[in-house]
Amino acid sequence: MREKIYVTRAIPRPTIEALGAEHEVIVNGQDRALSPDELRHNVKGCAAIVSLLTDRIDGPLLDAAGPSCRIVANYAVGTNNFDIPSAIERGVALTNTPGVLDDATATHTIALMLAMARRIPEAERFLRAGGWDGWKPMFFIGADVDRKVLGIAGAGRIGRNVARKARGFDMEIIYSDVAPNRAIEEETGARFVSKDELLTRSDFLTLHVPLLPETRHYIGAHELGRMKPTAILINASRGPVVDENALVEALREHRIWGAALDVFEDEPELAPGLKDLQNVVIVPHIASATEQTRLQMGEIVSRNVLAVLSGRQPDSCINAEALTHRSAPSAAS
Image 1 (spheres, rainbow, N blue to C red):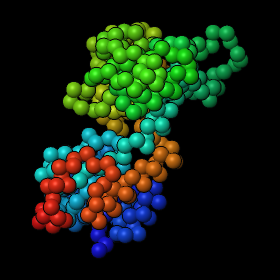
Image 2 (spheres, helix red, strand yellow):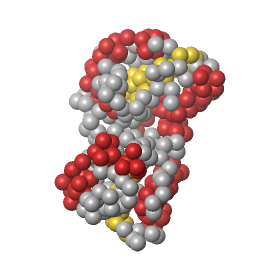
Image 3 (cartoon, rainbow, N blue to C red):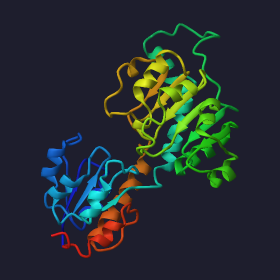
Image 4 (cartoon, rainbow, N blue to C red):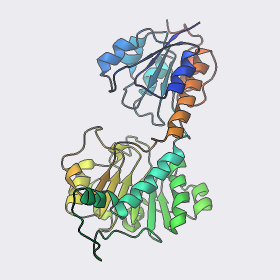
């Protein structure tokens, strides 16, 4: 039976075609995030929803979709937009796209590190504005990367990937997490340290922690005050792990050397004054924006949706309890 699938924003065509081969697919035709009211109206009667991190998936939305809704598949590795208990209560599977973003995000992290260290965006802006009048020996002096200390907060898949790539720069790698990770130590020679040592020793500090209540503002005014004045902070994880207002003040007062950010605390808004600073690289949440990565994300989404709608287990369900809560597609009715 062909059922309705709602896609909250345009994603790669092959994913839409894979879903559309078996079901009716409706895609949000507006190139913007929809309001909660708009989403609730649009998902009525849908058996599946393909969502983005910008979409809050909660009880009222699932109730608006109705008892036919059996899966919400995030086109993202993150899951902080999910109200997991509400989905379990209603027997709705929640899935994400883990693994396929690791290489792209880790490479992007290294790119941010190099861009800030060598002041590449700042120098390009200067050149494009017509400010260059010839080579000078003290022109746009940047920070060295080779043989410096790289601190990694969060030694999961992406943090480990960053550490592997950083070995090419002969960096000393230290990391902090809830517990030691033997894999990153064996692969890269990284050393487990306390959060305070991570802050005080890192020349480059890159964040790869999940967004949880205990990691919100993982880096705030206190932590920024513990960092070296020559340190560079890099965040390609989740915006709210950094207190953005505190970071603006630290950068403005040159209490750290610089920062490079792919994500922000209140996207798409930026903290006041952030975009006016020269000692920060800011890009609009593009860590996973490679053609191969986005296609692979879509493949996982389509597999998960088609599996659940045909009564099979999805590949990457984050709330397995929902699959047992709903004994049959009509159990919530």
